[in-house]
Length: 176
Image 1 (cartoon, rainbow, N blue to C red):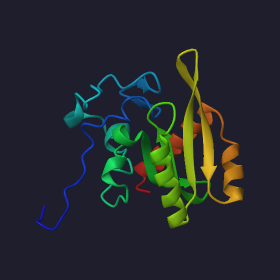
Image 2 (image 1 turned 135 degrees about the horizontal axis):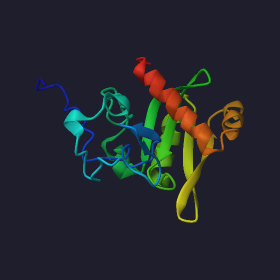
Image 3 (image 1 turned 180 degrees about the horizontal axis):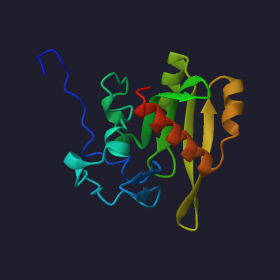
């Protein structure tokens, strides 16, 4: 690192992506809301140096990316959302925000909406649906042009949300 080069952001101690807010499988173990990765210590990853290539090393949240416009306070474990800034969805580059918990906090959602409007990019944001003490589904919401919001209204079930994340993982693996 040169004196003029900013320090690169580090994942740890944030473990939001490991704590089950994103649906994945790590070494054959399912990770989903209510079932975090067995290697997450809530203060880091106990196998960080030897973590698997997929999904762990390949997934890079919007906050960690070197070209991230997200402010420092938007680290997922602090702002309450995992943000994917360059998500290709149905032919559109969208901003995607997944809550760390049941719902994205108002401050974070307000910032994301203002950013989306400023950049003229649509935003998909989620809420976890809780039933009998477990997260059972996701609700998807759209912010942007009416036609985009209408498309997003069709996404209401967790299985469709999981497909979005699988698409992102495939894109990320391909360098998209």
